[in-house]
Length: 133
Image (cartoon, rainbow, N blue to C red; front, top):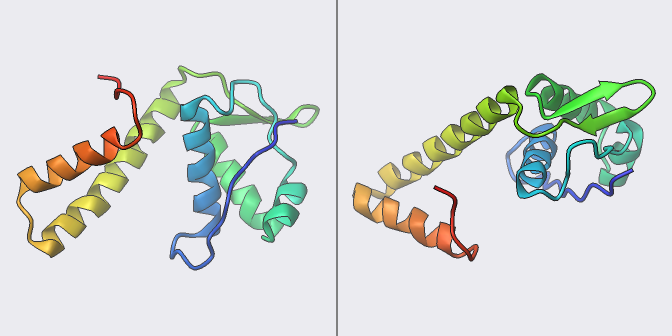
């Protein structure tokens, strides 16, 4: 069983199931959750996070629909092997969604495109290392 380290901020305005969903995707992308790693059972993770089991069930269901995890009764919920086209499509959708939110902020602030692109570059560089092309 993999120790899943996610944090839910109930005051963030983002649905708790979505926070769990997005954090699992980031952990898989970062390599912190490898293919075949078992996720905690729904009831245990719900208890640990102080959420309703239905909230975690929705996060797992959406992850499964996106190809990030697979569920089998005997093995529970496990991270799908990388290279799955559905996971790549969902990753692209998450990026588009984040870019849309960012573009809205840029527009509200009345900033030019160059300033926005510079801010993205600075943010990416703040994580250290190089960003894959």
